Length: 228
Image 1 (tube, rainbow, N blue to C red):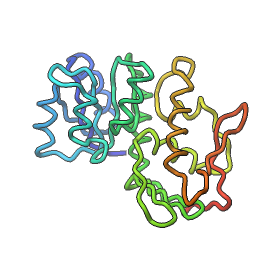
Image 2 (cartoon, helix red, strand yellow):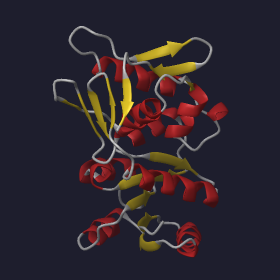
Image 3 (spheres, rainbow, N blue to C red):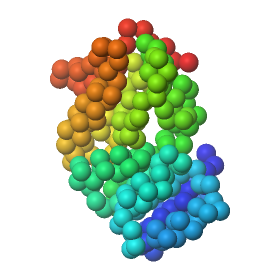
Image 4 (tube, one colour):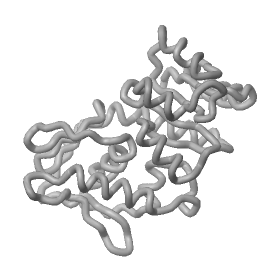
């Protein structure tokens, strides 16, 4: 899969390691070492995806992503040593498609980059009149109204909608939003995102079609389901 990747990393060793590996796997890599450098690169560049360190020398990466609305314009993966649940949620809420913690497993990072890139080629998913546009990353109610979702909420909904009627474990959904071993991150991260989704997806007095499967996790259980 050919893609242009903008790697924003201030540590020379990490930047060289990531860039070299991605180039060896057929990707075009553009390097940036700071927030200012990123801003300058984006003046004349349209990357397919951005790998963004959170701890930059001049700016906080999460705040930078929010200010520039990077997650709405490009694929966005945060790559950082900050690994608390709050950090993960902040990154996803700022528009990140994924959140990868250091030390980096390069093969895993490559797989996650490819996963984000593939999402732009997935079909529209519909259920009970709802429309989930994976290309534009938008959710529409049966009446056509747009529902604003964070990246974390959207990614979990895509996972559930892609496997309608199939229960998905918290560990699986944790893997959707984070590269960490599920044992190292609280299941409350998923629970909080599900709770927010359910609230946003209430429609005309009806609850969201996301159900809890006791002892397993969650499932999307529409009365009718169809993948276009």
